[in-house]
Length: 422
Ligand code: PMP
Image (tube, rainbow, N blue to C red; front, side):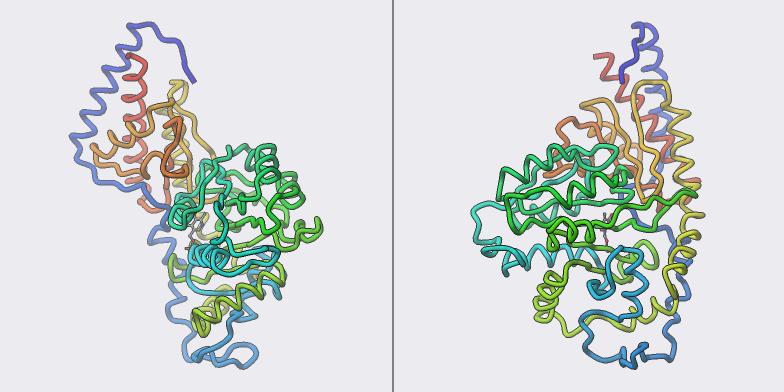
């Protein structure tokens, strides 16, 4: 991304960037672009939830939702999300309030009890490794670190992970037990997996008989355009390819209704569902069915989910447009950055010259603009090129967001031109 500049031109640009940065610091901003949290107005769209289920306490089959039991979750809620998550109702569980928690539990259960197809518990193996498409979601990587699972980075492409690399790694090494995938509008680069990628993931031979794809479909209905992206059905493809137990599908309503107070889902083969239920039965006497009923009454059906997400989009789209507009105006043609234009999800990935991301984040923090730490998008917090910055535009108000992105662009110019001048 280098553009040739004469020494004079570079020195002029650097002077201007320094002045702009000084002015930025002088403004004493306090802005936060760190995490992909819904804004209060987005949460307001689900305001009615809080009044539900009112005095109603019986589910469609007469179950009293106020009482213990029902480990599968309410069938009527599972029906709504079966379509959204591409999992047959019978193979979909509605669980607690967090899909990350389900991913954590699946890892722990796989470590401590034999997953279908495995010869032994993962904890008994000398080494366990997961493939980590990069850039990726830091909390996936944190789970691996927590449990001593080695992480092997695999580059992302516009169609999903580099499948040549994935196929080679899973074929040759039986300690590679899993891969993290955010298949639609991925966190953080907004990529959606192509049909060919899904087919290859389902069909590829793996040295580990108990290989699992952690399919974190967190942004299944989180579109930002009129042309929703649809991805291929991984669970069905795995079954068709003779690997029915390969996919663990996760999702939640955290960024549909209330973050941290929604409902999480797990979908998989009948054998895996039985395995998880048997493990879950030890840790819980049943999920929060009152919250599940509340969600049924509020969302009604899959069309209801889609209609609700149109409201979310109306709030989010202008923010993503503002990010694109400002980056284009401030950094377009400088050769100092490229950025993604996601068609959905929660993030924009900004790529700066190698060796600059940490410094940009540091300078932004000094100017009162807090960003996700550089490196967080990579295993062990280590982006070897130090080039990726994740922008989370959802939470701040539009005016604040604009200030933050303008400020960020100043920092990119400052650090980028300083590097070139060295
Ligand atoms: N997966 C991804 C890819 C996410 O971006 C997030 C939220 N940032 C989560 C999972 C967390 O989901 P939950 O609230 O259901 O635990």
